[in-house]
Length: 369
Image (cartoon, rainbow, N blue to C red; front, side, top):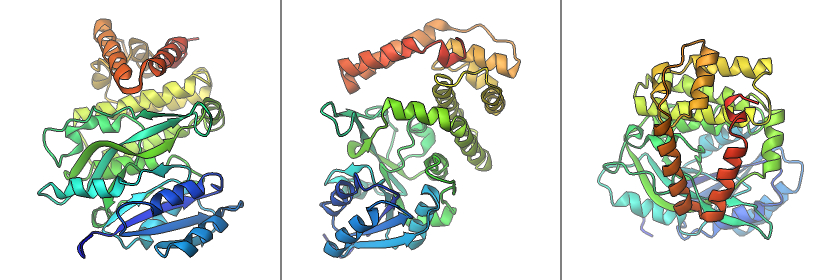
């Protein structure tokens, strides 16, 4: 490592993470790239998280602990951004872990490019059935799909990044870029999906994104039971965050059709996840869906071959618009293509499970019983 090696500020917002925190902190401390400041923000934990942080800090001088009252994920990340001194900023969630060469490889990749990079983005690992004998490590849903014509690039050249899990932690950000653009997190109680607006705030404000199609970040996925419980107790939260993201796109005057299609796709994904568990006939759900649809360009929705015919009919009904003729074959071709991709990306058993689940819930996902 040279004297000019950039400092990376690793921000870890922590609330009651005692079960996973040793693994998370250990994975950061064991990075091959050593020039790190590790900012642990204890967000009013009531378990032994603070003691675990203190134990690690006593053994590694790069760790700094900020002990604060509970304010939620967004506020904790903002405090971390305020405290950060690094050239780059990384966010690591306390129930995840990262592989040893993550920062080394990201910086080495950026060094190959002639232009200073604002965001270095990578693929990530999905950890399913975590901490059980059935734990598996799967590729994320955009692995091998991001093919910009050049590096670095603007998000309009790789809008597929906007369709999937925000995964803001599978990237590092130039701190000066965040400060110049005034980018910060929305301060929402609890976790609150504050990563959603941060995704578009960052990716839509630079043409200096670099993408490395290697996975390093290990993301523990929620169990189906927890996902169902979340949908039942935080029913409208996904649509609220979609609207926050749309607010950002409108403020930035984003008009690129590919970016807006990607955001539309996220909206349908979020709504489908809701109405799998809470029926569309519920007034609050129906009103929230109708409001979201009002913010979508109808021509972009109806012409998008990746939006299912059922979703298009639901969109037309809630917008009180005539539904044009739908090209079902284009959608079916897309499903076949997606199936082939899934086979290559996640294997036979996971593709079979995903396909079975899709077919089982297909009607509910479009508002039909």
